[in-house]
Length: 464
Ligand code: SF4
Image 1 (cartoon, rainbow, N blue to C red):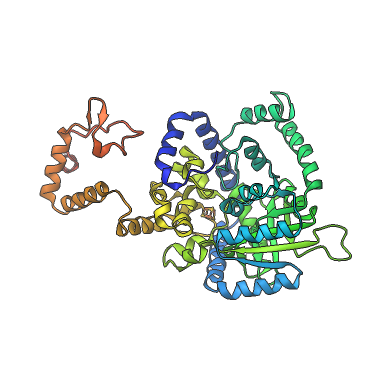
Image 2 (cartoon, helix red, strand yellow; image 1 turned 135 degrees about the vertical axis):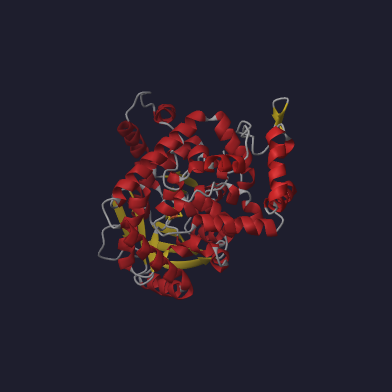
């Protein structure tokens, strides 16, 4: 199973709602737990001030991105890392392919990285005959299942413990009632061999400090540390928006990100990669490559409204609170970034036409704004993309005509009242099926029963 593309969002979300109640249950339960932990963690600190600080640092960084990118390149090279620039996803894959060929790489271990999902690195490596092993437990589970991730922090949250028990029983012979610790131990034993045999390790980068050239990586399992230090070569793919001005900023962002993601004050492990192994160091890679990836990010930056989405630290808090994501899970969105953040960056990274209808996959309730640690105005950006979609003729004609008719009626009280009265008696279903004009809306809903009295009548009665 692979991503189906945003264009199938309506069909895929309907499938989830109709056919997969147990997955919906797993997603809802996991996201509620994440959000409860986040709420508790923020209750212990001055979260509002911290979020203001994070918004301001990222805004400053994005307003001076060219300067900080040059500084980061100099710092990385001073540390002995090779710096590569990838304007597109294809450029990033070509850079990796060259490193693989130059070093006769046959086995790769990979740390969890959403950018690597965006670039479809695994499929590319496999097409070159290279074996790739995911090392994050959640990613390892979905790799064994042959599925893409469904959440940017918890890739396997749509799967239950029993699903994992069955999977591990098939692959490793663990008992069908094995405890989570025993499952993790089985994965650890299998992966340990791969860490030792790998020629190359791949990671993303949560943050890159421009002043010191430090790539910061947050995790809970220790697998990133092994992926980036045991193989001879380490390649880090870092989106250009992941920069922060100083290493001091990294300290603030690492803690803010984990509090927002899982409610932890800090990740169990924070790796600060500072170039290849020095002569006096006992371990670490001989070569470090940092690939700075654009792949549509400068398009997003050029947009007067949507640029703020580039402040994102990929904590997943907006997914966890989103009433839409909680029902559909991540696969329905059809590409690696799901939930509110996926809906606002897709038009920038993929192009608006390809991203449709994701900007509509929201009730605009605004819960995401309340939890976003970098204060991204998500509903505003969603509305902005919806407006652009109307301007570019990307919404169905019936919707445009229907909304124009509604506007015309709403601006004329007499017409509006007459239309309302007519609707109170008009059938919304015929023979148990929705009228064609309402078929999308009523795909997963029953027909609403109109009130016998208009709002104006009820209002007047209330005043009497
Ligand atoms: S948009 Fe905000 S809440 Fe959502 S993943 Fe990004 S930083 Fe986290």
